[in-house]
Every structure is written in C-alpha cells, then in structure tokens.
Image (cartoon, rainbow, N blue to C red; front, side):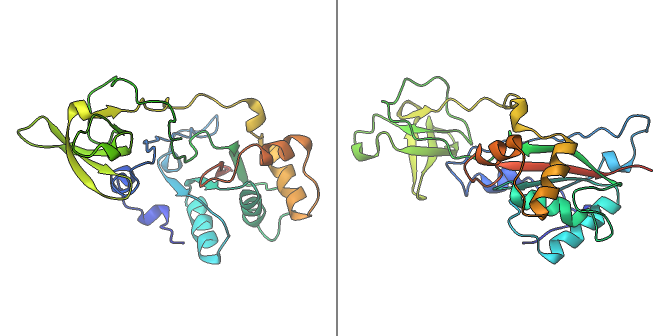
Length: 250
C-alpha cells in the first residue's frame, strides 16, 4: 500500500486513468464536502481531504500517514471490503493513552455501508434492446447486427472514441480486442442512477454506535444487533463500507 499525505498530495484524474483499464467498471466522480463543526469558520481543514481506499490491513506506514493528515486538519475518508478493518482503525487512532472505544479529540462524521461502493454491472441475460442514446467516449454497451463476426453480437464493449471523419466508433471488448463499428451496431447500456439514493438508516452508524462497535471489536465481544446486521448486509467488495473522521476543534 502506498499513501500520500494531504500536505504533499497531487491532483490526479483517477477516473480518466482507470477507465481504459476497467472496461466493465462503473466509474463516476464523487465530490466530498465536509462542513466544519457549528460555531467555527471554514478554514484549511475544510479544504483538505485524505482518502484511503480498500484498506485491508493497518500497516504502520499507512497509520503514520493517516495520523499526520488528521493532525494537519484534514478530513479522512477510509473504505474497506468489510467493517472489521474500519473498527480496527478507530481503535488505533484513538491512541495508546485513550480507552479503546472512545476518543476525546477524534470525531466520527459518518460510518457504515458505502453508498458509492465499487461494483461491476451485472451482465444482462435478456435480448439486447433498442438503443436509447448515441455512443459516446466512456459509454458501456453491447454489440449487435455484426454480419461479418456474428459471434460477437451481444458481447459487452466499451467505447474508446469516435473515429475521425466517419460514422464509426472505436470500441474495446472485454479482454482488450478493439474494433471499429458503426453506431447502429452498438447499443448503449442505460447508466446506473447517479448519485445513488440515500441508504436506509439501518445502513449507517451514529458516532456513538461506531465507537461502541469498535470497543466490542477490540475486546472480541459480540456487536449489538444493528452492527451485526450491518456487517452481514453487504457481500465483501472493494469499498463496501466507509468511515469519515476528523479531529475535533478545541
């Protein structure tokens, strides 16, 4: 795992970088905004965000970076495939001098199931429907009506770009093969609703519930019924759960 602190972070368009590599992935940009606590004026802490994605184990170098970012006033968002690593992180960040499951200077802003969790679209078993929109760079869809290579009809594909001075589009099949096809031979899949709607209350934890769960996790005790149900509510996935943290202002 590699991490860059908030003070030395450079801006990268990860969607643009990942889209050619993950032709079946549904990628979308998410803008985060965490308001400062009531009674304070916006400052540097409202402008810095540190993101640690798909955390599975708490390596010392990662913990050091996250502690430094929090100390510098950054808001911290951590995602994981399961709830356990996030509870481990809460206990570690509480500090050796604090009782496990509580922290006077660390605020849990949100915790629970991540509504923006990574996914791969489910393959459609039904026949390819009529196109609802024209192809565009980055669109996902399926091939149809290819007379020269009928075996490819129905295959998933990703639109790379329009072919200059023609009515064709360069598409990439799952596996990497690229073709030039006419617009009529490509059906654009309807995108998933974005942004996703709010999750039910049962999918989110209050700060008190998160700390209580972290305390039980540290002591290897059973969670409460709500946390137990939440931990089982989602199959393991890259970013199935998330946690938002920041330092309390004195």
